[in-house]
Amino acid sequence: MNYFIRTEGKSKLQYYYTTELGETPIPGAVSCTNNTWGKNVIEHVNEALNSIVDTPYYKASQAFWLSP
Image 1 (cartoon, rainbow, N blue to C red):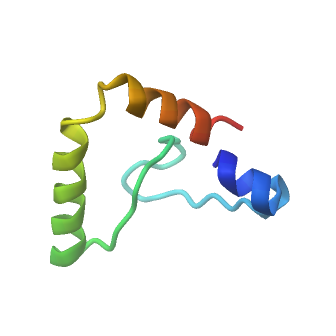
Image 2: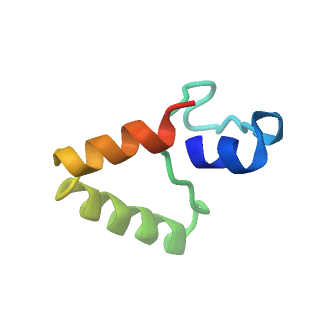
């Protein structure tokens, strides 16, 4: 989000609510189609995140890129 705001400006941001989450924002969320392919991709992303999400580097990166 930080990168997008810096390069495109805040006025170009568009948020879409999902059926599954409604108006609950999830910073850094990744979306895919709700089919076999999309579910497989999200499964792989979640698996990869498990090994890095608690590292200081990842936390610092998330704090920088996702802060407004």
